[in-house]
Amino acid sequence: MSDISDLNVDLNKLDNKYFVDPEKCTQGEKPDNPSSFTKTAKAREGRSTQVYNKRTYARLVAGCLAFDDQFGKVLMISSSKHKDKWIFPKGGIEYDEMADFRQTARRETWEEAGVLGRISRKLPVVEDHRFLQKKKVDKQFRGVDLTMDGSRIPRSEFHFYEMQVTELSQDWPEMHKRHRKWCTYGEAKHELIRADRPELLSALKDSRIIKDCTSVKIDEHSNTILDAKPDKDDY
Image 1 (cartoon, helix red, strand yellow):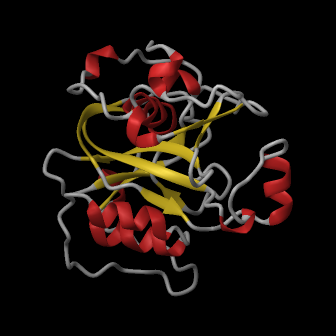
Image 2: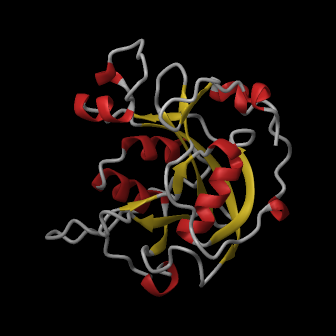
């Protein structure tokens, strides 16, 4: 791993947090090497060494939009907190992954979705503008001298990557906590609107997924998608 000074880490670590400049952390990204990743049996847990944007204080998160080989469908996973809502695999960037955010993106995509693949492109950065409430700011940034209004701190800053799936495992760390399914652009858009996740929808729109115009059939009572091909799309 690179020396701490090379990663632009604020050496005053406060309350298990590191404050960094994301652009400087990712400047040295090398060509993707899928074979460097090793499957794990358990998901990494805890937030002992979280990384934050030193300018906005947003928690840095990375993940993947995992596509089939034709970019016709994207793989979505159920939220661990809200089983009826669908999102993309993602998670907090840890201190030892700061040199290359793709490490986090690949790890989280494996742990949450059981997917391996080739990362082909980085998507524009998006922020979660569900701003932190004062009580949470006081708790989360205890001991930090904030230079901006705490009520305007984004919850997260997302660094998403496009991944083309090469393996969809039937055995993965969070298989008992989440479901997964393939969605067309229209289906994924509906699910993200329903989950009230505009920042994830922004990433979807920026991706190379085929923007189909096929109408999506919705159950009028539950507002859930009536998938015409559950045998092919649900895993």
